[in-house]
Image (cartoon, rainbow, N blue to C red; front, side, top):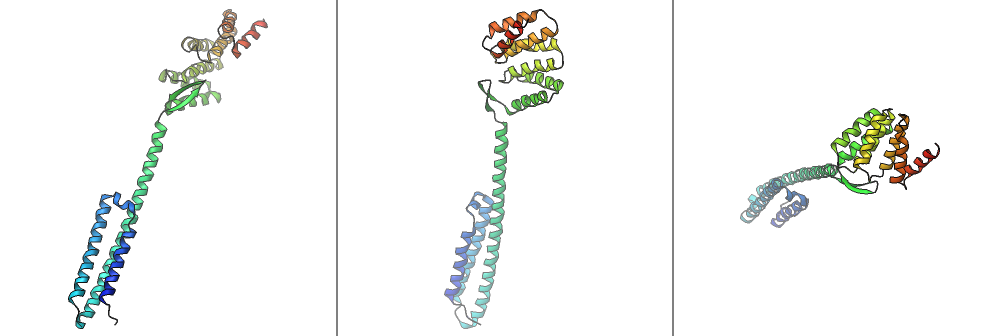
Length: 251
């Protein structure tokens, strides 16, 4: 059997010691338990190295060489075992860190969805909550789909829940249109009058007045003519005023 020299054993131990730190991911030290485990393992390896060197210093006679080689083999096996434990630990910590990063990313995405965002409605810029925007869009989707009853209910609920929203003037206007689409002219007139009273500066105000005139005409209300005349006076540059002139000229 080939004898293992003192320098050869020391080199093997030092090589193992050099390899171990390189396998530990920098992220291990972000975890207190993982860091403690690595320190414990390294302490064991260091103890084995010291013990091996001590044996090499004290056992130099030929009769103990075989025993020392066997002990050295056991030492190398123990080091290999510790090396495997470090690899497993490094892999577990790496996976834990990835799960943590994924969790933070998901949480950040969820939080962003809850944050108010800036929108521009009819030339007016404002901050709106995501739920506010969703509710308005859902109501308008129902209106565009022709479900005027459901759209009217959703728009009325929106106006009650978000009275100061940048979408509210439009919601009130389309609420009036949903009543008109259901041939409920009295409710349509009342809804559009709210637009004129509360949101007179809204771009929807001229159209609201034109819709009132349309409902009055259907109800054979003589006030329709005056409503058209008032529309031309109050909003002379609007497209609704152009339509009002055409209606008055056709009479």
